[in-house]
Length: 307
Image (cartoon, rainbow, N blue to C red; front, side, top):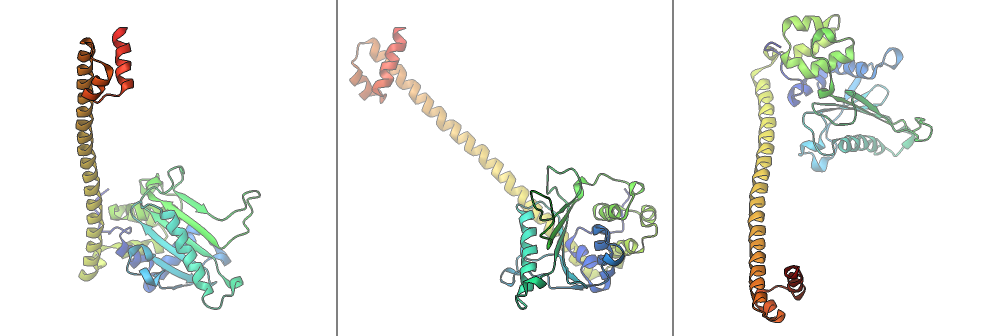
């Protein structure tokens, strides 16, 4: 694919610009309706952005903040998260975020019957579920015996970009695939490809235009570049740690090998001394004292020598 004027939507700054700002909430509404296939009376009509900080006590830590948190006109809350790299326990973190958002509703009067559904959507540029072949998976709480959906207040959707099999715009057959292609290949998409991707989807076009680097101010672009640098620095630091661990492992292996070799050499030397002493009819107790071998070891040596 040709060099593109579009920035990477997986970048945290770009992602929030497209899906987390008031001026672009029509993009977010369109995206949510498309991913969940909400149409007609079920379609989201409006959303209200909420504070993304889930835990004030640890608000300064990145892992305590979701990318986008909003509430639709029916009260359902939506968490949208962009996950760039595989992190241990991400699926647990997703459930934690959902639980925090759910429990926070009860703080307003403990009217549990008024609690609204939480829908968590994660777009991951990594493999989250190695045993699943499909790039999109949907998770609910079900009765194990009947598969009935009685507990309806938690719904999770995970989109794993590496599993998306289509690599060309003319392979896209529906709006969900267009969105996934957008996340995976926007920063590699050229003008001609864009026209074929957009078709009649005006909102998709708007999402691409928000990524057009020529529509970004210098300050905005610097923030984007700083985020790129932060990710690269983290990746480099991780790579260095892995290299250091490998080197330490090799050094430890060499040291252990030398120690084991020395120990084996000492034992072999003791055995040779014991053999010589046995040849000269030295008694077992003296051999034990001189070599450090045990009585049993000397007796085993005698049996071997007699065979």
